[in-house]
Image (cartoon, rainbow, N blue to C red; front, side):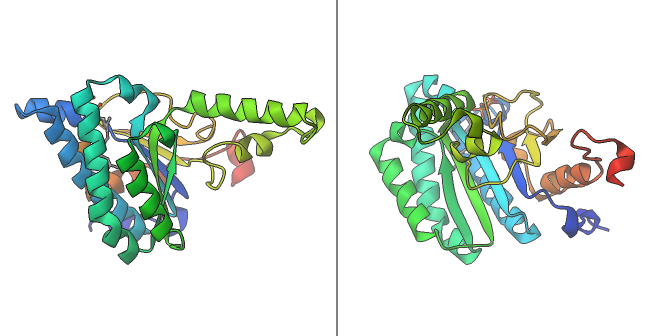
Length: 246
Ligand code: FPP
């Protein structure tokens, strides 16, 4: 019996979010430059995207570049931007073939013009695809996202567009980059780190977590299946008792 047979297609996470970590360590272990780790990381991105689409996961969000990542050496930032552009160019066909819509979250005004242009072009070309939404978190920070939402909402309150009494969780949701996405069901983080690193803090309120020691460039189909099998064994109670949800 292979691992896919153990997956219940009726209980897939509707929204899977992945913190792809360990590219640098993967390269170091092999005596290579960090750039090779990122380059090989793009292969795991492709495998993960295709496998999620095949399984029927409707939303996949990948933490590709955080607001904090701008503080890395310029050479590494340039490498990551170059890989982003080349992957977008290379993978457009795969996205179209698999009926995948590309979406992004984050402050993309910070991206170099060439990356922004490519990203927006692929988003436009894939906007009518319906099988899966692939969201890239780029120049993304959850605190910045929440701060911007607070500012916009305050402004609307000040201008009598929203009343304080009407404020609720759905209004906050509507002001986040993720307004079109469901809450996250499962977060995977690779490389043995057990941190959230400013990723989707609001959206993971009831998410399940799966941590693996596998470094991102080594993360392949079976690692994804293991994560989903583990998720499907969990009892998600959303604050209720076990008896209530049976
Ligand atoms: C973390 O590894 C990974 C990143 C900061 C970037 C993730 C980027 C990719 C997988 C490639 C490009 C992505 C796309 C979507 C085309 P790390 O460098 O923090 O690893 P370390 O902790 O071992 O140093």
